[in-house]
Length: 250
Image 1 (cartoon, rainbow, N blue to C red):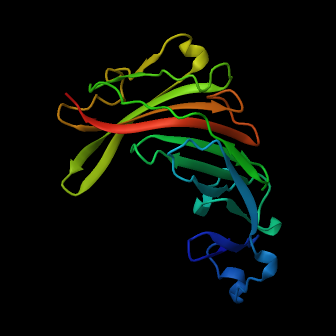
Image 2: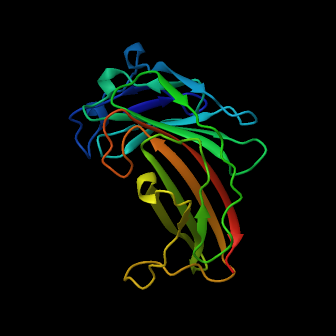
Image 3: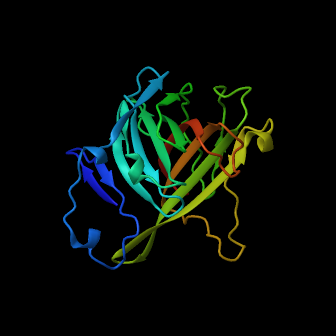
C-alpha cells in the first residue's frame, strides 16, 4: 500500500499493489504516480448529544486489514473521515472509528463512541449522558462503584475497570503492568460494584501493585449494538462513558 498524507496526517490518497513481491522493487521499479482515481473520498461524521461543557469530539480512524494489522487513516478527524478508493480496499477490510469528547472542566472524564464498518459510509455517534465518578478508594486491588442510569433498560451494557502501574525492570527499561476486568450488566444484576480480583496465586498472573506505587485507574460503562464479550458482527458500534485518574497504593 502507498499512502499520501495531508499536512495534518490524514490520508489523502492510496493505492494497493496486489501481487507485490517481498522483498522486491515496489511496482517493478517503475515510479509510483498517484492520480485522481487514488484520491480518498470524504465521509461525514455526525456528533449528537455532546454534553454541555464537553469539547468538540475528535475521531481516530483506521482501516483494519482483514485481521492482518491496521492502517491509520486519521488521528483527529472532526466532521468527516477519509474513505479509500475501492481499488485500495480488499475483501474483509473494515473501517474502525473511535470518537472521544472529554469534559473540558474535569480531566479524565469523557464520553466515547466507536463504529466498525464493513464498507465506508456516513457515521453518526449518539453520545450518552455524562457520568462523573471520583474513582475508587486507594487499594492494591480496588473496588469500583457504578451508579449510572444513562443506559437503563438497554441491552448490550457492560462495566469495565482497569488498573496499571509502572514496572521498573531495569534502570533503562520501563514497562507497565495492567489488569482489566469486564462484567456484563446481565452478570452484575443489581450489583453496583466491581472489584479487581486477587489472582496472584495463579501461575502467570500479576501480584498487586506494591505500597507506594502510582496506580492509574479507569472505569468505563459501554452500551453496544450486540452482546458484549462475543464475536463482533459486521457494522458493530458502541457508545460509553469513562473516567480515569491516579492514586498511590497504600
